[in-house]
Image (tube, rainbow, N blue to C red):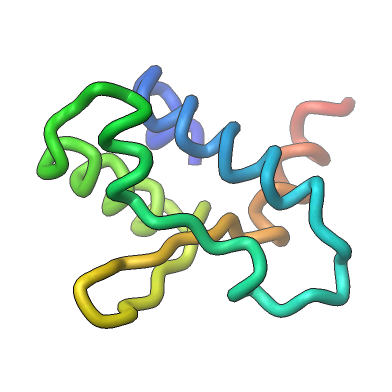
Length: 91
């Protein structure tokens, strides 16, 4: 997890997804907290292929989940991973 988050762009993506997660009601389904990666490409001013790579790395590290909907690939934070990171950092 820490290796994936060592890249500044991936850390920023994860933080933004986590912030959006924190603003949601816990009982809502994952679809309520999904975000399209194309919006992150625009927001970070990076090529879509680069953003796609960052999302892939975060997914492989178990930090986020993905779901395809038509042409879009939607992502959301794994709340268990967030809690695990919090537990490690709050010693």
